[in-house]
Length: 99
Image (cartoon, rainbow, N blue to C red; front, side):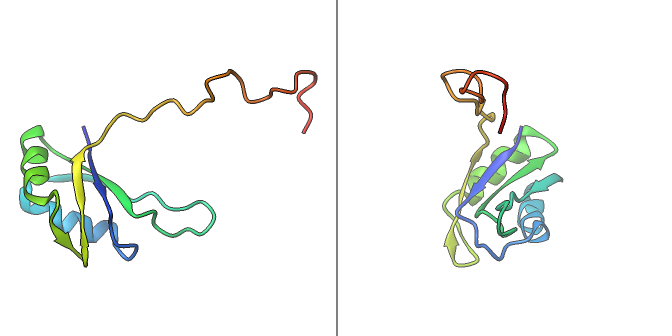
């Protein structure tokens, strides 16, 4: 399971997040999604810890805490939803699929 970390500073790095979370256990992985067009961080990230107890301790300690000038949101990450439109496939023109 992963931890969602929101309302992050756009200046944050993976190393910054890892440093904060290591106080609560072993950090296995840190992800900071970036904007496809600008390459800038999107203001949220995900942290994976070694155990669920470590994740719980980090969430309880850090949710709502001020860090890098912002009140961060920390909670269990929700599984990614299927992003396909509800109405069916992407090519709605029918026919030969030309673009």
